Image (cartoon, rainbow, N blue to C red; front, side, top):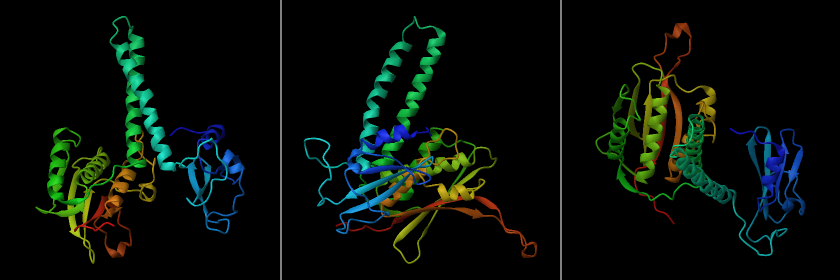
Length: 326
């Protein structure tokens, strides 16, 4: 991830329409935007002015920086107006979505220009190589923006009753035939012939595809790698649990604690949004997702030695019947 300095983050504050302050890891105030300078701040997070019209949120930006935001209720007047026209104060989600959209335009122009230059026969070999680097990195950035968009503003789900087993079979067929899942992997589909759930079928297909690809990555350097799909009803609920299992090294403690944290990844070139996007999609379906290690065969009790992980399991629960929405 890029390293941001205080000047860059301070400039970012002035883009926000809500009061915002930047603190370092020691709790020192580094900068605040114009809106924040015009008001009095409560001392603690969650405090208000007594009328309950403002709430303080603290966002961990990473690398020792913390953003303090004051959210005002719609009935509370803005403390200061930055322009001559009153407007709706954008949320952080809308702001980030807009920035992502605007970045796509210059990227498209860069890729078009690079393509035209690469078609020019007068370009020498060294320049052609550099243009190739620009093209590849621009495409990678475009993919990053696509992933980030899915996390910041996921598409609205269209839930319906559908057969998850059929979706799983089609997903496995597609991933194996386009070599996304290596042919050396053994795939065991132990889902029942029919498994009805209430969710968006397209979103759940993407969830399953991401989890299968993650499992394949975990088995990359392992012989006899096996991925298993299975399901079971969740006790005392109307939900169905679907699990993607592998016989890889399992999750470390750090991976278990941070797997769903945005931008966390143990892979060198990964953005670290895959499981975060999966979590957003599952929660949007009124479901839940979790991960765990599969226990290996334990040794004798007399040895008093703990068992070691024998692979990992990512499970998600989905409604097994329609949910009424208000």
